[in-house]
Length: 559
Figure 1 (tube, rainbow, N blue to C red):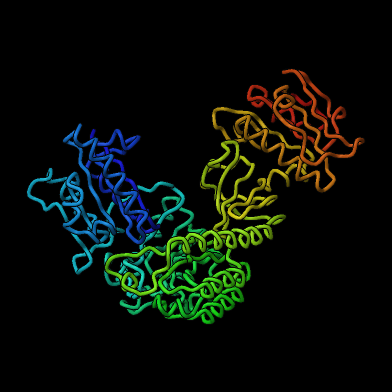
Figure 2 (cartoon, rainbow, N blue to C red):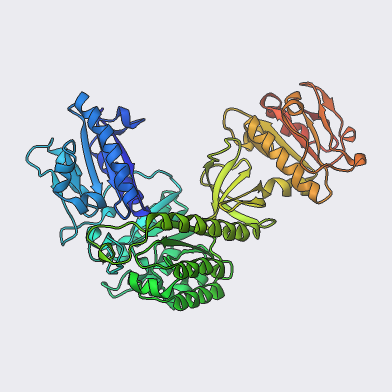
């Protein structure tokens, strides 16, 4: 079987388009390669909103060209905004490229491959009437419980620094029925969270006689969808009906990404953003009044042509005044074909570097302060998988779109409550609240070490997980309960004593936590062990442990 690899640069819309590219290639009979080096077809789905992605693409294409000289049958395809911006010039810039297509003509890749490269043009571009929604193509979802849903393409704004309207075309909305049918189908397939995508979602539907608020309410009404997100809105189009829909629709998450770009009204005018600092701040007040627990994130640009030190300080003060939960920060990057590239008073690079460093410092401090307010709360988390930094922890996102690394035994796609214990500027950390509740309520929690991935029901216990995950869970539980003056007695096999550190909060000498080792098969009477008790068992003991624990006054088998 021939194989493919897709490399994605840029925004969420590109991530969505890449899933469609993968689905389309799989419909042609190709399989996803384990790595780029093993692929017969290399696809680069590009971004060109800043210079950095262009530079990265050049490096990737250089490596791909070297491999193609060794394997002439390998196909190199370039899609997305960079391909659209360069058009036919891409083949002279990079002769190793076999086929290219714009974001509105993704299907051209399948046409070219299906023809074996014969009788089909190498390039197809799509900012005119020939554009087609990528949402109509087959899909390869990266996660079964989350999905992107395209609601529009293109942009009618004329921001002086932005190349998106030139490469994605004028705004066009998908018909509401098509969007709702896709969401309903996804919900039927087990998707719990959908993200509605557009270059400017808030102006959705104006070409169809409808609006974004109506679409939000209709998506919220679909059974099975538990979380609805959207990105990206434009502040100028964030109207009262959308704010009311956010407040009233249970599935719509308490988060909005609201690009500010600059805190200076003078710079915003030069950017052609069509709102002032004062109008933006008023919008923030209206949104937070309607949705009190709202998280706000943003985009910020430093070094825009003509930006003075006073202008930049207004951006710093806006970050403080709004209290953003996080921000994507960028140095202004001149883009050919935009109005700003020809503006006078281009800011020197050393000034840009100084300003971005100062801005990041303020953004991180404010974000850390905002996240610290979540400590001690119970947050609903959609589990996405293992933590990227510690395989014994789980990772997920809150409704406010904050990443949480936590101790627990849930599976990817589960919605769980997590007690938040710590915070940084970018993440929260905690422990699955259900485990602490069970230990408090029942005076006992039974954990079984299993390498086979079974759930707790298989062992008649509360949780089954790997040994490393259980160790982490015990540490978190001991620390959390000790804050309330509850000290855990742990009856467990010997590996707990050798691998688990003492709880972070030490109890008084008279109430030390007990970590006792009981050999496999040893029976301990309940009166020998003080409550609350955390039992950790091997999987061998776990098969029979439920029957023993279910007998009131019976013995306890651990191993």
